[in-house]
Amino acid sequence: MKEIRIHGRGGQGAVMAARMLASAFVLEGKSVASFPMYGFERRGAPVVAFTRVDDKQIREKTQIYTPDCLIVIDPGLLTLPTLFTGLKPESVFILNSPKKLTEQPEEHLKTGGVVNATQIAVEEIGRDIPNTCLLGAFAAASGWLKLQSLLDCLPDYLSGDILQRNLKSAERGYREVEVTKW
Amino acid sequence: MVSAQKGQVRVITGNAVGAYGAMLCRPDVVAAYPITPQSEIAELLSQFKADGVLDAEYVEVEGENSAMNVVLAASVAGARVFTATSSYGLVFMYDALQEASGFRAPVVMVNANRETPGIHCVSSGQQDLISARDTGWVQIIVENDQEILDQIIMAYRLAEDYNILLPIMVNYDGFYLSYLAEAVEIPNIEDVDAFLAPLKQQPERQKLVPGVSIGCGTHGMEMGYVEARYKHCQALERVKNKVDEIDKDFGDYFGRYYGGQIEEYRTDDADIVILASGSATGTVRTVIDTKREQGIKVGLIKLRLFRPFPAERLVEVLKGRKAIGVIDRSLCFGWKYGPMCMELRALSPEIGPTPLLSYIDGLANLDINVPHIERVIDEVSAAAQGKPYQEVTWIPMEE
Image (cartoon, rainbow over all chains, first blue to last red):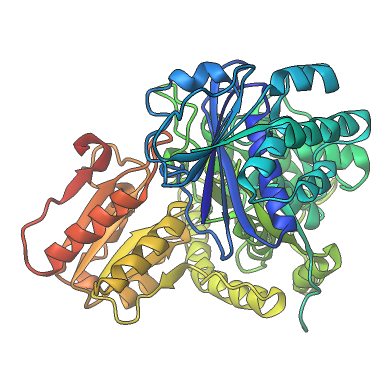
Protein backbone atom coordinates (compact mmCIF):
# COMPACT_ATOMS: atom_id res chain seq x y z
CA MET A 1 0.00 0.00 0.00
CA LYS A 2 1.12 3.55 -0.72
CA GLU A 3 0.03 6.27 1.69
CA ILE A 4 0.02 9.87 0.49
CA ARG A 5 -0.56 12.83 2.80
CA ILE A 6 -1.31 16.31 1.49
CA HIS A 7 -0.86 19.47 3.57
CA GLY A 8 -2.51 22.65 2.43
CA ARG A 9 -4.83 25.44 3.48
CA GLY A 10 -8.57 25.80 2.96
CA GLY A 11 -9.11 27.06 -0.61
CA GLN A 12 -5.89 25.67 -2.14
CA GLY A 13 -7.53 22.46 -3.28
CA ALA A 14 -5.87 19.92 -0.98
CA VAL A 15 -9.10 17.95 -0.55
CA MET A 16 -9.82 17.96 -4.27
CA ALA A 17 -6.22 16.99 -5.04
CA ALA A 18 -6.49 13.95 -2.77
CA ARG A 19 -9.72 12.89 -4.54
CA MET A 20 -8.27 13.48 -8.00
CA LEU A 21 -5.28 11.31 -7.09
CA ALA A 22 -7.65 8.55 -6.02
CA SER A 23 -9.59 8.79 -9.30
CA ALA A 24 -6.38 8.75 -11.35
CA PHE A 25 -5.13 5.60 -9.60
CA VAL A 26 -8.51 3.91 -10.17
CA LEU A 27 -7.92 4.40 -13.92
CA GLU A 28 -4.79 2.27 -13.44
CA GLY A 29 -6.82 -0.48 -11.79
CA LYS A 30 -5.89 0.32 -8.18
CA SER A 31 -8.05 0.33 -5.05
CA VAL A 32 -8.18 3.73 -3.39
CA ALA A 33 -9.48 5.52 -0.32
CA SER A 34 -9.19 9.24 0.22
CA PHE A 35 -10.49 11.60 2.85
CA PRO A 36 -9.57 14.95 4.43
CA MET A 37 -9.57 15.86 8.08
CA TYR A 38 -10.65 19.29 9.24
CA GLY A 39 -13.28 20.72 11.53
CA PHE A 40 -14.91 23.94 10.37
CA GLU A 41 -14.70 24.79 6.68
CA ARG A 42 -12.51 27.91 6.74
CA ARG A 43 -10.50 29.44 3.92
CA GLY A 44 -6.86 29.65 4.96
CA ALA A 45 -7.05 27.16 7.82
CA PRO A 46 -4.62 24.23 7.70
CA VAL A 47 -6.11 21.18 5.99
CA VAL A 48 -4.70 17.69 5.77
CA ALA A 49 -5.96 15.15 3.25
CA PHE A 50 -5.09 11.49 2.81
CA THR A 51 -5.04 9.09 -0.14
CA ARG A 52 -4.31 5.39 0.13
CA VAL A 53 -3.55 3.28 -2.95
CA ASP A 54 -3.25 -0.47 -3.03
CA ASP A 55 -3.65 -3.52 -5.26
CA LYS A 56 -6.14 -5.03 -2.82
CA GLN A 57 -9.20 -3.59 -1.10
CA ILE A 58 -8.41 -0.90 1.48
CA ARG A 59 -10.14 -1.39 4.82
CA GLU A 60 -8.29 1.08 7.07
CA LYS A 61 -10.28 4.20 7.91
CA THR A 62 -7.67 6.13 9.86
CA GLN A 63 -5.54 9.16 9.22
CA ILE A 64 -2.12 8.49 7.72
CA TYR A 65 0.72 8.27 10.25
CA THR A 66 3.37 6.55 8.12
CA PRO A 67 3.29 8.28 4.73
CA ASP A 68 5.18 7.12 1.64
CA CYS A 69 4.72 10.58 0.19
CA LEU A 70 4.12 14.10 1.48
CA ILE A 71 2.71 16.80 -0.76
CA VAL A 72 2.99 20.29 0.73
CA ILE A 73 0.88 22.88 -1.07
CA ASP A 74 1.70 25.78 1.23
CA PRO A 75 5.43 26.09 2.06
CA GLY A 76 4.38 27.98 5.20
CA LEU A 77 3.34 24.61 6.61
CA LEU A 78 6.95 23.34 6.53
CA THR A 79 7.21 24.57 10.10
CA LEU A 80 4.63 22.03 11.35
CA PRO A 81 6.56 20.21 14.07
CA THR A 82 5.20 16.76 13.15
CA LEU A 83 5.30 17.19 9.34
CA PHE A 84 8.04 14.61 8.77
CA THR A 85 7.15 12.27 11.65
CA GLY A 86 6.55 8.64 10.71
CA LEU A 87 7.85 8.78 7.12
CA LYS A 88 8.53 5.40 5.57
CA PRO A 89 12.02 4.74 4.16
CA GLU A 90 12.40 5.81 0.50
CA SER A 91 9.71 8.48 0.83
CA VAL A 92 8.81 11.10 -1.74
CA PHE A 93 8.45 14.83 -0.99
CA ILE A 94 6.56 17.20 -3.29
CA LEU A 95 6.75 20.90 -2.48
CA ASN A 96 5.21 24.04 -3.91
CA SER A 97 7.95 26.63 -3.63
CA PRO A 98 9.76 29.27 -5.69
CA LYS A 99 12.99 28.16 -3.99
CA LYS A 100 15.03 25.05 -4.75
CA LEU A 101 15.67 22.44 -2.12
CA THR A 102 19.26 22.91 -0.99
CA GLU A 103 19.37 20.03 1.47
CA GLN A 104 17.55 16.80 2.29
CA PRO A 105 14.74 17.86 4.67
CA GLU A 106 14.59 14.47 6.44
CA GLU A 107 16.67 11.32 6.17
CA HIS A 108 13.79 9.06 5.04
CA LEU A 109 13.11 11.28 2.05
CA LYS A 110 14.88 9.86 -0.99
CA THR A 111 13.12 11.83 -3.73
CA GLY A 112 12.27 15.52 -3.70
CA GLY A 113 10.23 17.35 -6.31
CA VAL A 114 9.90 21.13 -6.19
CA VAL A 115 7.84 23.26 -8.50
CA ASN A 116 6.63 26.85 -8.34
CA ALA A 117 3.03 25.70 -8.58
CA THR A 118 1.59 28.97 -7.32
CA GLN A 119 3.19 30.89 -10.20
CA ILE A 120 2.10 28.28 -12.75
CA ALA A 121 -1.45 28.27 -11.36
CA VAL A 122 -1.65 32.07 -11.51
CA GLU A 123 -0.38 32.01 -15.10
CA GLU A 124 -2.58 29.17 -16.31
CA ILE A 125 -5.70 29.33 -14.14
CA GLY A 126 -5.55 32.96 -13.13
CA ARG A 127 -5.80 32.12 -9.44
CA ASP A 128 -3.56 30.58 -6.79
CA ILE A 129 -5.06 27.08 -6.90
CA PRO A 130 -1.89 25.05 -7.31
CA ASN A 131 -3.32 21.57 -6.68
CA THR A 132 -3.41 20.13 -10.22
CA CYS A 133 0.08 21.46 -10.97
CA LEU A 134 1.42 19.64 -7.90
CA LEU A 135 -0.30 16.42 -8.96
CA GLY A 136 1.57 16.67 -12.26
CA ALA A 137 4.77 17.16 -10.28
CA PHE A 138 3.85 14.15 -8.14
CA ALA A 139 3.36 11.93 -11.21
CA ALA A 140 6.77 12.93 -12.59
CA ALA A 141 8.78 12.78 -9.37
CA SER A 142 7.29 9.62 -7.83
CA GLY A 143 6.88 7.63 -11.04
CA TRP A 144 3.89 5.90 -9.40
CA LEU A 145 1.25 7.41 -11.70
CA LYS A 146 1.09 8.07 -15.43
CA LEU A 147 0.52 11.68 -16.44
CA GLN A 148 -2.20 10.47 -18.81
CA SER A 149 -4.20 8.90 -15.92
CA LEU A 150 -4.11 12.22 -14.12
CA LEU A 151 -5.24 14.14 -17.19
CA ASP A 152 -7.96 11.56 -17.88
CA CYS A 153 -9.50 11.87 -14.39
CA LEU A 154 -9.76 15.66 -14.37
CA PRO A 155 -12.99 15.80 -16.45
CA ASP A 156 -14.69 13.99 -13.53
CA TYR A 157 -14.09 17.13 -11.48
CA LEU A 158 -13.85 20.07 -13.86
CA SER A 159 -15.33 21.13 -17.18
CA GLY A 160 -15.08 23.73 -19.91
CA ASP A 161 -12.44 26.44 -19.79
CA ILE A 162 -11.39 25.71 -16.20
CA LEU A 163 -10.72 22.09 -17.15
CA GLN A 164 -8.47 23.13 -20.05
CA ARG A 165 -6.54 25.49 -17.78
CA ASN A 166 -6.04 22.78 -15.17
CA LEU A 167 -4.92 20.26 -17.78
CA LYS A 168 -2.21 22.76 -18.79
CA SER A 169 -1.30 23.40 -15.18
CA ALA A 170 -0.94 19.65 -14.50
CA GLU A 171 1.17 19.15 -17.62
CA ARG A 172 3.45 22.04 -16.70
CA GLY A 173 3.85 20.60 -13.20
CA TYR A 174 4.87 17.31 -14.76
CA ARG A 175 7.42 18.97 -17.07
CA GLU A 176 8.78 21.72 -14.86
CA VAL A 177 9.25 19.92 -11.54
CA GLU A 178 12.88 19.80 -10.39
CA VAL A 179 13.58 16.35 -9.06
CA THR A 180 16.38 15.67 -6.58
CA LYS A 181 17.47 12.20 -5.42
CA TRP A 182 19.16 11.71 -2.07
CA MET B 1 -35.43 -12.61 -9.09
CA VAL B 2 -32.28 -13.12 -11.15
CA SER B 3 -29.15 -11.03 -10.63
CA ALA B 4 -28.78 -7.30 -11.10
CA GLN B 5 -26.71 -5.88 -13.96
CA LYS B 6 -23.27 -4.56 -13.12
CA GLY B 7 -23.60 -0.92 -12.14
CA GLN B 8 -21.36 2.01 -12.95
CA VAL B 9 -18.24 2.30 -10.75
CA ARG B 10 -17.38 5.83 -9.65
CA VAL B 11 -15.00 7.38 -7.15
CA ILE B 12 -17.28 9.52 -4.99
CA THR B 13 -17.65 10.56 -1.36
CA GLY B 14 -19.91 8.93 1.22
CA ASN B 15 -22.20 11.96 1.09
CA ALA B 16 -22.49 11.75 -2.69
CA VAL B 17 -23.20 8.06 -2.29
CA GLY B 18 -25.98 8.95 0.15
CA ALA B 19 -27.54 11.28 -2.42
CA TYR B 20 -27.29 8.63 -5.16
CA GLY B 21 -28.79 6.03 -2.83
CA ALA B 22 -31.78 8.24 -2.14
CA MET B 23 -32.24 9.23 -5.79
CA LEU B 24 -32.19 5.60 -6.96
CA CYS B 25 -35.10 4.78 -4.65
CA ARG B 26 -37.27 7.43 -6.38
CA PRO B 27 -38.51 9.38 -3.34
CA ASP B 28 -41.61 11.52 -3.85
CA VAL B 29 -40.63 14.18 -1.33
CA VAL B 30 -37.19 15.28 -0.10
CA ALA B 31 -36.55 17.94 2.53
CA ALA B 32 -33.09 18.41 3.99
CA TYR B 33 -31.24 21.24 5.66
CA PRO B 34 -27.47 21.39 5.16
CA ILE B 35 -25.14 20.84 8.11
CA THR B 36 -21.48 19.82 8.36
CA PRO B 37 -20.57 17.02 7.61
CA GLN B 38 -23.76 16.19 5.69
CA SER B 39 -24.19 19.33 3.51
CA GLU B 40 -23.10 17.66 0.27
CA ILE B 41 -26.16 15.39 0.35
CA ALA B 42 -28.58 18.30 0.59
CA GLU B 43 -26.67 20.14 -2.17
CA LEU B 44 -26.48 17.15 -4.51
CA LEU B 45 -30.13 16.17 -4.13
CA SER B 46 -31.23 19.69 -5.00
CA GLN B 47 -28.82 19.55 -7.98
CA PHE B 48 -30.37 16.23 -9.07
CA LYS B 49 -33.77 17.87 -8.83
CA ALA B 50 -32.60 20.89 -10.87
CA ASP B 51 -31.06 18.56 -13.50
CA GLY B 52 -34.28 16.56 -13.75
CA VAL B 53 -32.58 13.36 -12.55
CA LEU B 54 -34.66 13.35 -9.38
CA ASP B 55 -38.40 13.50 -9.91
CA ALA B 56 -39.40 14.59 -6.41
CA GLU B 57 -40.76 17.56 -4.55
CA TYR B 58 -37.70 19.17 -2.96
CA VAL B 59 -38.98 21.29 -0.11
CA GLU B 60 -36.64 24.06 1.00
CA VAL B 61 -36.90 24.33 4.77
CA GLU B 62 -35.46 26.77 7.28
CA GLY B 63 -34.17 24.13 9.65
CA GLU B 64 -34.07 20.46 10.56
CA ASN B 65 -37.19 20.45 12.68
CA SER B 66 -39.17 21.55 9.65
CA ALA B 67 -37.34 19.05 7.44
CA MET B 68 -38.50 16.18 9.60
CA ASN B 69 -42.03 17.54 9.92
CA VAL B 70 -42.29 17.99 6.14
CA VAL B 71 -41.19 14.45 5.35
CA LEU B 72 -43.33 13.08 8.18
CA ALA B 73 -46.46 14.76 6.82
CA ALA B 74 -45.66 13.62 3.28
CA SER B 75 -45.01 10.09 4.48
CA VAL B 76 -48.34 9.96 6.27
CA ALA B 77 -49.99 11.09 3.04
CA GLY B 78 -48.46 8.04 1.32
CA ALA B 79 -45.26 9.49 -0.16
CA ARG B 80 -41.86 7.85 -0.18
CA VAL B 81 -39.61 10.35 1.60
CA PHE B 82 -35.96 11.06 2.32
CA THR B 83 -34.01 13.43 4.54
CA ALA B 84 -30.51 13.69 5.91
CA THR B 85 -28.96 15.35 8.94
CA SER B 86 -26.24 15.28 11.59
CA SER B 87 -25.56 16.27 15.20
CA TYR B 88 -27.18 19.65 16.02
CA GLY B 89 -29.66 19.02 13.22
CA LEU B 90 -30.66 15.68 14.70
CA VAL B 91 -31.23 17.09 18.17
CA PHE B 92 -33.09 20.08 16.71
CA MET B 93 -35.65 17.60 15.31
CA TYR B 94 -35.84 15.54 18.49
CA ASP B 95 -39.59 15.99 19.02
CA ALA B 96 -40.27 15.37 15.33
CA LEU B 97 -38.23 12.14 15.45
CA GLN B 98 -40.58 10.83 18.08
CA GLU B 99 -43.61 12.01 16.14
CA ALA B 100 -42.35 10.11 13.09
CA SER B 101 -41.95 6.83 14.94
CA GLY B 102 -45.19 7.35 16.88
CA PHE B 103 -47.02 7.91 13.59
CA ARG B 104 -45.36 4.69 12.33
CA ALA B 105 -44.19 6.70 9.31
CA PRO B 106 -41.69 4.87 7.05
CA VAL B 107 -39.26 7.79 6.82
CA VAL B 108 -35.72 7.02 5.66
CA MET B 109 -33.05 9.38 6.98
CA VAL B 110 -29.29 9.48 6.71
CA ASN B 111 -27.40 10.69 9.76
CA ALA B 112 -23.72 11.56 9.23
CA ASN B 113 -22.50 10.99 12.76
CA ARG B 114 -20.97 13.92 14.60
CA GLU B 115 -20.48 14.95 18.23
CA THR B 116 -23.43 16.68 19.92
CA PRO B 117 -23.89 20.11 21.55
CA GLY B 118 -22.40 21.09 24.90
CA ILE B 119 -18.82 21.34 23.73
CA HIS B 120 -18.81 22.94 20.32
CA CYS B 121 -17.05 20.35 18.25
CA VAL B 122 -17.37 20.00 14.48
CA SER B 123 -15.97 16.51 14.37
CA SER B 124 -16.69 12.83 14.09
CA GLY B 125 -18.24 10.75 16.86
CA GLN B 126 -21.38 8.67 17.36
CA GLN B 127 -22.87 10.70 20.21
CA ASP B 128 -25.72 11.96 18.01
CA LEU B 129 -27.05 8.50 17.23
CA ILE B 130 -26.79 7.56 20.89
CA SER B 131 -28.76 10.67 21.87
CA ALA B 132 -31.59 9.47 19.58
CA ARG B 133 -31.52 5.90 20.89
CA ASP B 134 -34.89 6.02 22.63
CA THR B 135 -36.89 7.76 19.93
CA GLY B 136 -38.44 4.54 18.64
CA TRP B 137 -36.49 4.63 15.36
CA VAL B 138 -34.63 1.77 13.76
CA GLN B 139 -30.93 2.63 13.80
CA ILE B 140 -28.41 1.00 11.49
CA ILE B 141 -24.67 1.77 11.33
CA VAL B 142 -22.56 1.16 8.22
CA GLU B 143 -18.85 0.76 7.54
CA ASN B 144 -17.96 2.12 4.09
CA ASP B 145 -19.29 4.04 1.09
CA GLN B 146 -20.71 1.05 -0.79
CA GLU B 147 -22.59 0.00 2.33
CA ILE B 148 -24.11 3.50 2.64
CA LEU B 149 -25.67 3.15 -0.79
CA ASP B 150 -26.76 -0.46 -0.36
CA GLN B 151 -28.18 0.17 3.10
CA ILE B 152 -30.32 3.11 1.93
CA ILE B 153 -31.91 0.83 -0.66
CA MET B 154 -32.43 -1.90 1.95
CA ALA B 155 -33.84 0.70 4.37
CA TYR B 156 -36.81 1.40 2.09
CA ARG B 157 -37.59 -2.32 1.88
CA LEU B 158 -37.56 -2.42 5.67
CA ALA B 159 -39.32 0.86 6.47
CA GLU B 160 -42.19 0.34 4.05
CA ASP B 161 -42.73 -3.33 4.84
CA TYR B 162 -46.35 -3.74 5.84
CA ASN B 163 -45.39 -5.59 9.01
CA ILE B 164 -42.81 -2.98 10.05
CA LEU B 165 -43.80 0.61 9.08
CA LEU B 166 -41.13 2.36 11.08
CA PRO B 167 -38.66 5.18 10.38
CA ILE B 168 -35.08 4.10 9.66
CA MET B 169 -31.92 6.06 10.46
CA VAL B 170 -28.92 5.02 8.36
CA ASN B 171 -25.82 6.15 10.27
CA TYR B 172 -22.31 6.61 8.93
CA ASP B 173 -19.30 8.25 10.56
CA GLY B 174 -19.13 11.90 9.64
CA PHE B 175 -15.78 13.05 8.20
CA TYR B 176 -14.38 9.48 8.03
CA LEU B 177 -17.10 8.32 5.63
CA SER B 178 -18.99 11.48 4.66
CA TYR B 179 -15.83 12.82 2.97
CA LEU B 180 -14.28 9.46 2.07
CA ALA B 181 -13.84 9.05 -1.68
CA GLU B 182 -13.63 5.45 -2.75
CA ALA B 183 -14.79 3.39 -5.69
CA VAL B 184 -18.49 2.61 -5.43
CA GLU B 185 -20.70 0.58 -7.74
CA ILE B 186 -23.88 2.52 -8.43
CA PRO B 187 -26.65 0.08 -9.38
CA ASN B 188 -28.92 0.69 -12.35
CA ILE B 189 -32.14 2.34 -11.27
CA GLU B 190 -34.19 -0.40 -12.96
CA ASP B 191 -32.51 -2.95 -10.72
CA VAL B 192 -33.32 -0.87 -7.65
CA ASP B 193 -36.92 -0.70 -8.90
CA ALA B 194 -36.95 -4.49 -9.17
CA PHE B 195 -35.52 -4.91 -5.66
CA LEU B 196 -38.15 -2.58 -4.19
CA ALA B 197 -40.99 -4.05 -6.28
CA PRO B 198 -42.17 -6.52 -3.59
CA LEU B 199 -43.35 -3.48 -1.59
CA LYS B 200 -46.03 -2.95 -4.24
CA GLN B 201 -47.41 -6.45 -3.77
CA GLN B 202 -48.36 -5.93 -0.13
CA PRO B 203 -51.62 -4.37 1.06
CA GLU B 204 -51.57 -0.61 0.54
CA ARG B 205 -50.78 1.26 3.71
CA GLN B 206 -53.24 3.69 5.21
CA LYS B 207 -52.94 7.22 3.88
CA LEU B 208 -54.07 10.48 5.35
CA VAL B 209 -56.08 11.96 2.48
CA PRO B 210 -58.85 14.56 2.48
CA GLY B 211 -62.23 13.12 3.39
CA VAL B 212 -60.93 9.91 4.95
CA SER B 213 -60.69 9.52 8.71
CA ILE B 214 -57.81 7.41 9.96
CA GLY B 215 -56.01 7.26 13.25
CA CYS B 216 -52.39 8.30 13.18
CA GLY B 217 -50.56 10.47 15.64
CA THR B 218 -53.82 10.77 17.52
CA HIS B 219 -54.40 11.37 21.16
CA GLY B 220 -54.16 8.12 23.05
CA MET B 221 -54.87 8.25 26.75
CA GLU B 222 -54.49 5.20 28.93
CA MET B 223 -55.13 2.05 26.87
CA GLY B 224 -55.02 3.94 23.58
CA TYR B 225 -51.45 4.93 24.39
CA VAL B 226 -50.50 1.53 25.79
CA GLU B 227 -51.79 -0.40 22.80
CA ALA B 228 -50.04 1.87 20.27
CA ARG B 229 -46.76 1.64 22.16
CA TYR B 230 -47.11 -2.13 22.53
CA LYS B 231 -47.60 -2.50 18.78
CA HIS B 232 -44.65 -0.18 18.12
CA CYS B 233 -42.42 -2.32 20.35
CA GLN B 234 -43.67 -5.52 18.70
CA ALA B 235 -42.86 -4.06 15.28
CA LEU B 236 -39.34 -3.25 16.48
CA GLU B 237 -38.92 -6.89 17.53
CA ARG B 238 -39.98 -7.99 14.04
CA VAL B 239 -37.33 -5.70 12.51
CA LYS B 240 -34.53 -8.03 13.65
CA ASN B 241 -35.35 -11.03 11.47
CA LYS B 242 -36.56 -8.76 8.69
CA VAL B 243 -33.13 -7.09 8.51
CA ASP B 244 -31.52 -10.52 8.04
CA GLU B 245 -34.08 -11.49 5.37
CA ILE B 246 -33.65 -8.27 3.39
CA ASP B 247 -29.86 -8.59 3.60
CA LYS B 248 -30.09 -12.06 2.09
CA ASP B 249 -32.44 -10.88 -0.69
CA PHE B 250 -30.14 -7.95 -1.41
CA GLY B 251 -27.06 -10.16 -1.55
CA ASP B 252 -28.75 -12.72 -3.77
CA TYR B 253 -29.71 -9.99 -6.21
CA PHE B 254 -26.83 -7.50 -6.10
CA GLY B 255 -24.05 -9.85 -4.95
CA ARG B 256 -23.17 -7.96 -1.76
CA TYR B 257 -24.05 -9.34 1.69
CA TYR B 258 -23.57 -7.45 4.95
CA GLY B 259 -24.64 -9.96 7.58
CA GLY B 260 -27.98 -8.36 8.49
CA GLN B 261 -28.15 -7.38 12.16
CA ILE B 262 -24.48 -8.11 12.80
CA GLU B 263 -21.54 -9.11 10.66
CA GLU B 264 -19.04 -11.64 11.99
CA TYR B 265 -15.39 -11.60 10.93
CA ARG B 266 -13.15 -14.57 11.80
CA THR B 267 -15.30 -15.47 14.83
CA ASP B 268 -15.63 -19.21 14.07
CA ASP B 269 -12.83 -20.43 16.34
CA ALA B 270 -12.27 -17.14 18.18
CA ASP B 271 -11.48 -17.25 21.90
CA ILE B 272 -11.95 -13.51 22.17
CA VAL B 273 -14.25 -11.18 20.28
CA ILE B 274 -14.09 -7.43 19.67
CA LEU B 275 -17.41 -5.65 19.19
CA ALA B 276 -17.28 -2.40 17.23
CA SER B 277 -19.33 -0.45 14.68
CA GLY B 278 -19.03 1.91 11.75
CA SER B 279 -15.90 2.94 9.88
CA ALA B 280 -13.57 1.71 12.65
CA THR B 281 -14.45 -1.91 11.92
CA GLY B 282 -12.40 -1.80 8.71
CA THR B 283 -9.28 -1.00 10.71
CA VAL B 284 -10.20 -3.63 13.33
CA ARG B 285 -10.27 -6.28 10.57
CA THR B 286 -6.70 -5.47 9.48
CA VAL B 287 -5.44 -5.67 13.07
CA ILE B 288 -7.27 -8.97 13.60
CA ASP B 289 -5.48 -10.40 10.54
CA THR B 290 -2.12 -9.37 12.03
CA LYS B 291 -2.95 -10.78 15.47
CA ARG B 292 -4.16 -14.03 13.91
CA GLU B 293 -0.72 -14.41 12.29
CA GLN B 294 0.72 -14.15 15.82
CA GLY B 295 -1.53 -16.98 16.96
CA ILE B 296 -4.18 -14.96 18.83
CA LYS B 297 -7.63 -16.34 18.09
CA VAL B 298 -9.58 -13.10 17.82
CA GLY B 299 -12.67 -12.18 15.83
CA LEU B 300 -14.88 -9.14 15.21
CA ILE B 301 -18.57 -8.53 15.57
CA LYS B 302 -19.62 -5.51 13.57
CA LEU B 303 -22.77 -4.18 15.15
CA ARG B 304 -24.95 -3.01 12.25
CA LEU B 305 -28.33 -2.84 13.94
CA PHE B 306 -28.27 -0.76 17.10
CA ARG B 307 -32.03 -0.27 17.56
CA PRO B 308 -33.61 -2.73 17.95
CA PHE B 309 -30.62 -4.29 19.71
CA PRO B 310 -29.79 -7.67 18.13
CA ALA B 311 -29.87 -9.52 21.45
CA GLU B 312 -30.53 -13.05 20.19
CA ARG B 313 -27.84 -13.11 17.52
CA LEU B 314 -25.28 -11.53 19.85
CA VAL B 315 -25.92 -14.12 22.56
CA GLU B 316 -25.61 -16.90 20.01
CA VAL B 317 -22.20 -15.64 18.83
CA LEU B 318 -20.78 -14.53 22.17
CA LYS B 319 -21.79 -17.43 24.42
CA GLY B 320 -18.73 -19.37 25.57
CA ARG B 321 -16.11 -16.82 24.46
CA LYS B 322 -13.24 -16.31 26.90
CA ALA B 323 -13.37 -12.50 26.87
CA ILE B 324 -15.06 -9.66 24.98
CA GLY B 325 -13.87 -6.13 24.23
CA VAL B 326 -16.26 -3.37 23.17
CA ILE B 327 -15.05 -0.20 21.42
CA ASP B 328 -17.46 2.73 21.77
CA ARG B 329 -17.15 5.98 19.81
CA SER B 330 -19.51 7.73 22.23
CA LEU B 331 -20.35 8.09 25.91
CA CYS B 332 -23.12 6.95 28.15
CA PHE B 333 -23.58 9.81 30.61
CA GLY B 334 -24.25 8.34 34.02
CA TRP B 335 -22.80 4.92 33.24
CA LYS B 336 -19.06 4.31 33.27
CA TYR B 337 -19.22 1.90 30.33
CA GLY B 338 -19.60 2.98 26.72
CA PRO B 339 -23.18 2.79 25.39
CA MET B 340 -22.74 -0.36 23.30
CA CYS B 341 -20.92 -2.07 26.14
CA MET B 342 -23.72 -1.10 28.50
CA GLU B 343 -26.24 -2.63 26.10
CA LEU B 344 -24.18 -5.79 25.88
CA ARG B 345 -23.92 -6.03 29.66
CA ALA B 346 -27.70 -6.29 29.79
CA LEU B 347 -27.19 -9.67 28.09
CA SER B 348 -24.64 -10.89 30.65
CA PRO B 349 -26.96 -13.53 32.16
CA GLU B 350 -27.40 -15.10 28.72
CA ILE B 351 -23.79 -14.70 27.56
CA GLY B 352 -22.39 -16.07 30.80
CA PRO B 353 -19.61 -15.00 33.16
CA THR B 354 -16.94 -13.73 30.79
CA PRO B 355 -14.72 -10.64 31.18
CA LEU B 356 -16.26 -7.68 29.34
CA LEU B 357 -13.90 -4.78 28.73
CA SER B 358 -15.22 -1.35 27.75
CA TYR B 359 -13.13 1.04 25.64
CA ILE B 360 -13.96 4.67 24.84
CA ASP B 361 -12.06 5.87 21.78
CA GLY B 362 -12.36 7.85 18.56
CA LEU B 363 -14.22 10.85 19.99
CA ALA B 364 -14.04 14.26 18.32
CA ASN B 365 -11.98 13.32 15.22
CA LEU B 366 -9.49 11.27 17.20
CA ASP B 367 -8.64 8.10 15.33
CA ILE B 368 -9.43 4.58 16.43
CA ASN B 369 -6.03 3.68 15.04
CA VAL B 370 -3.97 0.51 14.70
CA PRO B 371 -1.96 0.86 17.97
CA HIS B 372 -5.20 1.48 19.90
CA ILE B 373 -6.84 -1.65 18.50
CA GLU B 374 -3.68 -3.71 19.13
CA ARG B 375 -3.81 -2.58 22.73
CA VAL B 376 -7.48 -3.56 23.04
CA ILE B 377 -6.81 -7.05 21.64
CA ASP B 378 -3.75 -7.55 23.88
CA GLU B 379 -5.68 -6.56 27.01
CA VAL B 380 -8.76 -8.63 26.15
CA SER B 381 -6.47 -11.55 25.38
CA ALA B 382 -4.78 -11.21 28.80
CA ALA B 383 -8.20 -11.03 30.50
CA ALA B 384 -9.16 -14.26 28.71
CA GLN B 385 -6.15 -15.90 30.36
CA GLY B 386 -7.45 -14.93 33.79
CA LYS B 387 -5.22 -11.89 34.31
CA PRO B 388 -6.66 -8.84 36.09
CA TYR B 389 -8.09 -6.16 33.80
CA GLN B 390 -9.48 -2.65 33.83
CA GLU B 391 -13.26 -2.58 33.24
CA VAL B 392 -13.36 0.77 31.45
CA THR B 393 -10.56 2.49 29.53
CA TRP B 394 -10.68 5.91 27.92
CA ILE B 395 -7.85 5.23 25.50
CA PRO B 396 -6.93 8.87 24.63
CA MET B 397 -6.74 9.78 28.34
CA GLU B 398 -4.07 7.14 28.90
CA GLU B 399 -1.77 8.05 26.02
